[in-house]
Image (cartoon, rainbow, N blue to C red; front, side):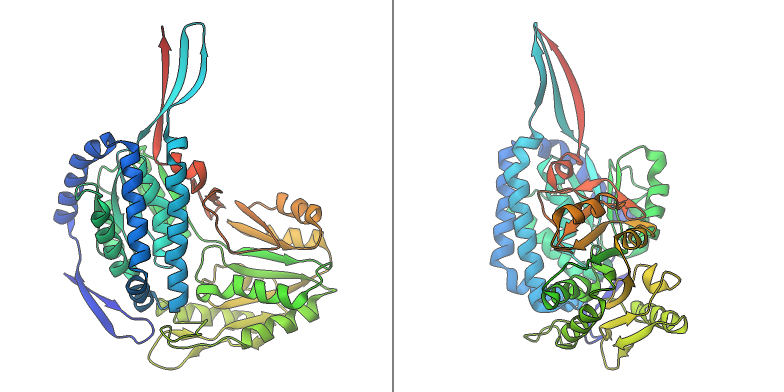
Length: 456
């Protein structure tokens, strides 16, 4: 059965692709099962060379790849280029450090006994990926998985299918064998079928609801399952910041980049009462300066929302906040026209009774709340079922680190936000998921350690 690919900026159908059924998925799995052992036997340096070639192909084809990405998900063209360049940067770190973290690790060698750890591949792993950053979140999984000697069954989001097919094409052009990387095409039903296959690990990026479903469904298999889920990421602006305009601009970008459709986007802001008025004024002026429209046009900062259903969800959050006493400073509604556009929205007089301060928005909407001191800010920052990132803006590093150390989140930011580094683990707590990608932890996540006791 064909699946239509819709451009969210125009509602036009840009392609129709054949979805996988159970028979085709079974066949692809058998292909991967056959190819994995041969791939694991390929010298690591050869696997590294192939992934570095893939990275070069991304760079060589960046304009056409960015155009497809923008057409599929609605993000501005420059942000699509930025994503692909970010993927290239992550591949560089992963390939440069693969040998170090995949090599045998001698733990003890004395009195005729050598004790070492060998990092063996899991086997055939499943990567159920996301639409908001398909290159980046895909790179976090399939690159280290392939480096470690695994075969990969890759399911791109149905909203980023064409990008997923580009990824497959370039990986194979770079030298990844046909029987080592296969793509599963379709929506939720296709993903559900993958859960029934005897795969050796599941790596999912997406919502808490879907992650919980996947985790429960595959638990009886007793195989690794990592879930990179959403967030309701807090940011606190203390009273000692000096350049309010710069802080407001940087944090507004952290909240609204990619239309706020980022797992680590700033989702709620707390501002010390002494700088609150100045900060809100500068924040709204920054938001008002952005250009909204056709994501293929130069200078556009706010493109289309990727999914039509999200527009009603955002309207519900705004209506709930206003009904409970929030003040709307700008935005608040969808933009009429052919595409799925929503005005950048800033709400004040908010509190934690409102959905906008509790539920993941995943859109261009932010609530800003006044606080009287660090203790109040910290209490509110931790008042969430999520735990992905937290940010503090302050002149005092010790003060910021103390607050960040007390937050229950996988990542802390001081005077920055909404960023990911390949050198550091990307992990969540509570409803933001578990397990880690990136860093040495994210390379070894795709291995199973074997202990060797060698006498002689």
